[in-house]
Amino acid sequence: MKYLYNLIPLGAFFASLALEVILDRREPLYEWLLYPYTLLGLAPMAIGLYFLIAFFRLFEKHKTTVYPGGMPTHLVREGPYRVSRNPVYLGYLLMLLGASATMGSFSSFLPLILFYAVLDRVVIPFEEKRLRERFGAAYEEYARTVRRWI
Image 1 (tube, rainbow, N blue to C red):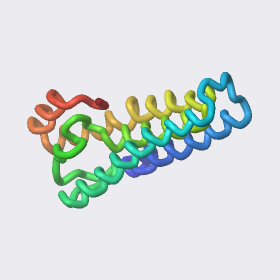
Image 2 (image 1 turned 90 degrees about the vertical axis):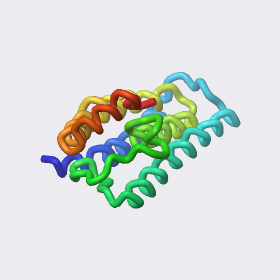
Image 3 (image 1 turned 45 degrees about the vertical axis):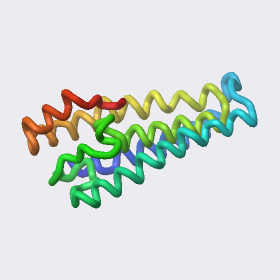
Image 4 (image 1 turned 120 degrees about the vertical axis):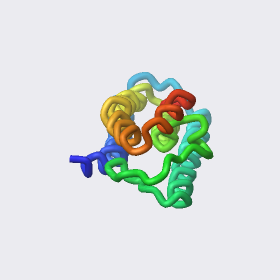
Protein backbone atom coordinates (compact mmCIF):
# COMPACT_ATOMS: atom_id res chain seq x y z
CA MET A 1 0.00 0.00 0.00
CA LYS A 2 2.82 2.41 0.83
CA TYR A 3 4.05 2.20 -2.77
CA LEU A 4 0.71 3.54 -3.99
CA TYR A 5 1.63 6.80 -2.24
CA ASN A 6 4.61 7.07 -4.61
CA LEU A 7 2.22 7.42 -7.55
CA ILE A 8 -0.51 9.63 -6.07
CA PRO A 9 1.17 13.08 -6.10
CA LEU A 10 2.50 12.97 -9.64
CA GLY A 11 -0.56 11.11 -10.92
CA ALA A 12 -2.88 13.65 -9.29
CA PHE A 13 -0.80 16.48 -10.76
CA PHE A 14 -1.06 15.18 -14.34
CA ALA A 15 -4.73 14.22 -13.93
CA SER A 16 -5.49 17.71 -12.62
CA LEU A 17 -3.56 19.34 -15.46
CA ALA A 18 -5.42 17.23 -18.03
CA LEU A 19 -8.74 18.06 -16.36
CA GLU A 20 -7.86 21.77 -16.42
CA VAL A 21 -7.31 21.59 -20.18
CA ILE A 22 -10.46 19.56 -20.79
CA LEU A 23 -12.64 21.89 -18.72
CA ASP A 24 -11.11 24.96 -20.34
CA ARG A 25 -11.70 23.61 -23.85
CA ARG A 26 -15.11 22.01 -23.34
CA GLU A 27 -16.74 24.04 -20.56
CA PRO A 28 -14.91 27.37 -20.28
CA LEU A 29 -17.07 28.94 -17.58
CA TYR A 30 -16.51 32.67 -17.46
CA GLU A 31 -13.35 33.86 -19.16
CA TRP A 32 -11.97 36.02 -16.36
CA LEU A 33 -8.45 36.47 -17.66
CA LEU A 34 -7.69 37.43 -21.26
CA TYR A 35 -4.50 37.61 -23.29
CA PRO A 36 -1.93 39.12 -22.65
CA TYR A 37 -2.79 38.92 -18.94
CA THR A 38 -2.93 35.13 -19.20
CA LEU A 39 0.86 35.27 -19.48
CA LEU A 40 0.92 36.23 -15.80
CA GLY A 41 0.35 32.53 -15.18
CA LEU A 42 3.97 31.90 -16.13
CA ALA A 43 5.15 33.46 -12.83
CA PRO A 44 3.54 30.89 -10.48
CA MET A 45 4.62 28.15 -12.87
CA ALA A 46 8.25 29.32 -12.60
CA ILE A 47 8.05 29.53 -8.80
CA GLY A 48 6.52 26.05 -8.68
CA LEU A 49 9.29 24.70 -10.88
CA TYR A 50 11.86 26.29 -8.55
CA PHE A 51 10.30 24.43 -5.59
CA LEU A 52 10.47 21.14 -7.49
CA ILE A 53 14.11 21.63 -8.47
CA ALA A 54 15.03 22.69 -4.92
CA PHE A 55 13.26 19.61 -3.56
CA PHE A 56 15.21 17.20 -5.76
CA ARG A 57 18.55 18.93 -5.11
CA LEU A 58 18.08 19.05 -1.35
CA PHE A 59 16.98 15.44 -1.10
CA GLU A 60 19.88 14.34 -3.29
CA LYS A 61 22.29 16.38 -1.15
CA HIS A 62 21.00 14.72 2.02
CA LYS A 63 20.73 11.29 0.37
CA THR A 64 17.15 10.77 1.47
CA THR A 65 14.24 9.36 -0.47
CA VAL A 66 12.10 11.49 -2.76
CA TYR A 67 9.32 8.88 -2.71
CA PRO A 68 6.36 9.47 -0.40
CA GLY A 69 6.20 5.72 0.33
CA GLY A 70 9.91 5.47 1.10
CA MET A 71 11.46 5.75 4.55
CA PRO A 72 13.30 9.08 4.95
CA THR A 73 16.84 9.07 6.31
CA HIS A 74 17.13 12.81 6.94
CA LEU A 75 14.75 15.55 8.08
CA VAL A 76 15.32 18.35 5.55
CA ARG A 77 14.79 21.79 7.10
CA GLU A 78 16.68 24.12 4.77
CA GLY A 79 15.85 26.01 1.59
CA PRO A 80 12.11 26.20 0.96
CA TYR A 81 11.58 23.75 3.85
CA ARG A 82 12.22 26.67 6.21
CA VAL A 83 8.84 28.18 5.24
CA SER A 84 6.78 25.15 4.16
CA ARG A 85 6.79 21.51 5.22
CA ASN A 86 5.58 20.60 1.74
CA PRO A 87 7.25 22.85 -0.83
CA VAL A 88 7.20 20.14 -3.49
CA TYR A 89 3.39 19.94 -3.26
CA LEU A 90 3.18 23.71 -3.10
CA GLY A 91 5.29 23.69 -6.28
CA TYR A 92 2.85 21.34 -8.00
CA LEU A 93 -0.06 23.51 -6.86
CA LEU A 94 1.60 26.69 -8.14
CA MET A 95 2.31 25.05 -11.48
CA LEU A 96 -1.36 24.06 -11.79
CA LEU A 97 -2.44 27.55 -10.75
CA GLY A 98 -0.17 29.07 -13.38
CA ALA A 99 -1.35 26.69 -16.08
CA SER A 100 -4.94 27.52 -15.20
CA ALA A 101 -4.24 31.25 -15.35
CA THR A 102 -2.68 30.87 -18.80
CA MET A 103 -5.96 29.30 -19.94
CA GLY A 104 -7.97 32.13 -18.41
CA SER A 105 -11.27 30.37 -17.72
CA PHE A 106 -12.80 29.90 -14.30
CA SER A 107 -13.55 26.22 -14.98
CA SER A 108 -9.84 25.47 -15.37
CA PHE A 109 -9.35 26.41 -11.69
CA LEU A 110 -11.73 23.76 -10.37
CA PRO A 111 -9.23 20.84 -10.49
CA LEU A 112 -6.96 22.79 -8.11
CA ILE A 113 -9.44 22.16 -5.31
CA LEU A 114 -9.45 18.42 -5.94
CA PHE A 115 -5.66 18.30 -6.22
CA TYR A 116 -5.25 20.20 -2.95
CA ALA A 117 -7.76 17.94 -1.18
CA VAL A 118 -6.03 14.72 -2.30
CA LEU A 119 -2.66 15.94 -1.10
CA ASP A 120 -3.87 17.58 2.11
CA ARG A 121 -6.17 14.75 3.22
CA VAL A 122 -4.46 11.63 1.85
CA VAL A 123 -0.78 12.02 0.97
CA ILE A 124 0.50 14.55 3.53
CA PRO A 125 -1.03 12.81 6.60
CA PHE A 126 0.62 9.54 5.45
CA GLU A 127 3.99 11.29 5.09
CA GLU A 128 3.65 13.13 8.41
CA LYS A 129 2.92 9.84 10.20
CA ARG A 130 6.09 8.30 8.74
CA LEU A 131 8.16 11.38 9.67
CA ARG A 132 6.83 11.29 13.24
CA GLU A 133 7.70 7.59 13.48
CA ARG A 134 11.20 8.15 12.09
CA PHE A 135 12.23 11.47 13.70
CA GLY A 136 9.96 11.77 16.75
CA ALA A 137 10.48 14.96 18.76
CA ALA A 138 12.64 16.56 16.05
CA TYR A 139 9.76 16.33 13.59
CA GLU A 140 7.23 17.51 16.18
CA GLU A 141 9.33 20.62 16.84
CA TYR A 142 9.67 21.23 13.09
CA ALA A 143 5.90 20.81 12.58
CA ARG A 144 5.24 23.35 15.36
CA THR A 145 7.52 25.98 13.81
CA VAL A 146 6.89 25.51 10.07
CA ARG A 147 3.44 25.53 8.50
CA ARG A 148 2.16 22.68 6.35
CA TRP A 149 1.70 24.77 3.21
CA ILE A 150 2.88 28.37 3.67
